[in-house]
Length: 147
Image (cartoon, rainbow, N blue to C red; front, side, top):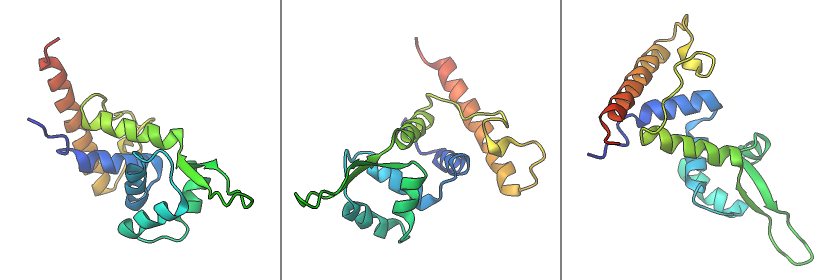
């Protein structure tokens, strides 16, 4: 049975908190993952769907989620092209590994900000419990998988 999305909310929240992303930025990275190169217009087209933020493009460049592939050349009228950075591509690969049960979410507070012992936020406590359930589910699948 395919139930990749069963823990999507848990994985999504973990990724957003760990990497300091909001939902629209994460959606943007996921959308652009299959685009080898894109221009600013293509970025703006999709940003209309996820919520307009006039500063998103520059911020994502500055934070290292996007990088320039080709600068604008006024002599040839070639427009600038961009691509997802290694950092962004690595993040999407991790998300797929979590969804496919190939990788556990860190249970150590050193690698996972949701695992801080004295965290008083209810939402974080719920997420912590859900991460432990997700990891247990993955461990059980790994034990029962034929080698």
